[in-house]
Length: 184
Ligand SMILES: [Zn+2]
Picture 1 (cartoon, protein in one colour):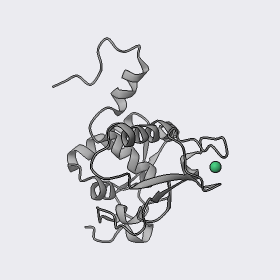
Picture 2 (tube, helix red, strand yellow):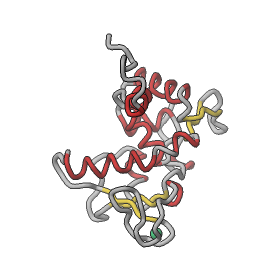
Picture 3 (cartoon, rainbow, N blue to C red):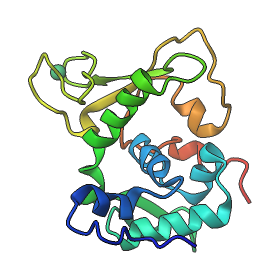
Picture 4 (cartoon, rainbow, N blue to C red):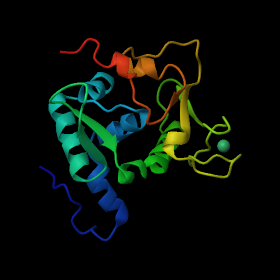
């Protein structure tokens, strides 16, 4: 088993960030948290990650202070996962990683979504900045929108369906009314 820490790299802040974020699924969990996913079953529905792996990753993100676990008022005994300030601070880096991937790690197909500043409606640049307003908007002031409304999303899970129309980051997804459908 590989050690979790990067021995000899402790003075490098990239290495320290990777000790928190560098495991498989972790950044995709954070992505979905920005999209507004808060419940274990909704992460599962959208990620198809193994349940034990997702459970471990969520616990690590809570322990490392990126997510906060709260009681789910709608489901006794279950948890809601909310981004902490440290978690929210990852937004520009996560966004820039996606912009890099679109440019240099492109796979089959084109990007499916783009991100706009809520205040002015203009697309963000590759660093998550709104050129028009000269700010890097807080994720709560960003809209994720499908590039093409005439193409149905490849995935049909309830989170993907919620992203098939413009959606404000951090707003709960799926809508609270949908979240219990098909569970148990
Ligand atoms: Zn703007």
